Length: 347
Length: 264
Image (cartoon, rainbow over all chains, first blue to last red; front, side):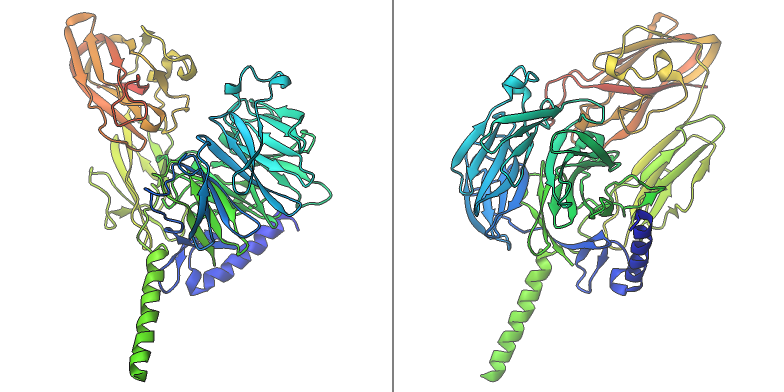
């Protein structure tokens, strides 16, 4: 289906929704006046108190990333060294916590290997990537790629994200450092390095997130966010630049693929007067933006996306999203006053 | 007993409903974002056009020009406004389901006297040197984005002399600046003006240091001159110590200026 046709259909669909009294606007309310945020196919109610814990016992600093493990539990990574990892059930009940050695705990990726769950943690203060078991036992640590010739010292390596392939190969995005993408085999041996800081197609300003995109089984690729550039870039698994998907106005964090859609936390709106101007963004299987909870209704003009920006001050600095098996979404926030994650319930 | 049970069950249902209500976000708990204001220029030559927008269904933007905070009873914005006279516009967004936004303020200026020459005594930061020496007097004002090339950024004192073609009566001087504390850009600490090189004419005006975190805004200070002048030497000092409440406490603040206007 062409994009134009899709938009036409979706606008007809939203017209249908408009006719319905319960959905008189993108931000509408049920009879109990629960706020509904988002657009088109992806609309949510908001649970602000999900996962709230006693900050004296289980504190958080920045809530950086979240994943759902094979048992259905929600795993949160924070840079608070009293408990870097907090594990919840889907209702927000505390199950357990661990980790005291990740002062720059930032990226959290789940890897399923022969039925067992593992975690890849990036720590920009330790300048390392750490692979652990699901309960925190360290498997290996990866230091800065000294032999690549692109790094003078470990301080230039501030990794923000990882992604893992089916064969155990993994990639690291150095979003706060020299902006290279490093490719390792399952043992942690360096295979390739590409990207780097710059303005060309194959380079990045703030390569903040990376994600393995195997929605098209015949053409798997990598999606990498260039957050400062408001662009999502696609690369081959060999590190060759393929294409760009601009998201004007949106400082996108990592891409999170769930079923056929891509979900993003957007840290800030580029041109907002307030700094805490984040929102969420959802792309469909054709990489078209279909919903922006907390922001403008996505619209295209001559095939280019209109600038997106925060319209309601619901989120502060969203940093990651996690979509569970019920299609609900959890939002971890950076610099939000030590708040716990927010849960969005799909309607 | 049965009646008691029924009542008890009913109470349970009510309680659980209430609890549910408390958890989910309700209407009028969260503010709207500020409306976006776009002016064709903030300095009026013949006229400027101003647009206000907040792309959200059901939103209404209201505005004032008398300095008061916009209310829902204030004039409603419906189409771009054509403005011919210097004025301060205040815009605010309203929605039945969200709390009103903060106020967006837009100051529009008359372009003032034409400056013949500008002599820079200190140099702007290399990274934020605007469009060169004339940026401060080119009748184009910077927007809220500090990367806008209309801004001239200093991490020290910004000192220049404005020379008029002929000796002319100058009523006042307007110095425009940006406040963006999240980016370490603060209002200047003070402005000193010397007319025609005459040190006895020196005026120093001090600007208050912000006491808390604030949103980005464009501000100005007006210094009365009220005399015939040929040249004005203007020195604008950046804040030497960022206040304690800020992440950058103790460090030097950035100073971003645009524009310098000599009012007739």
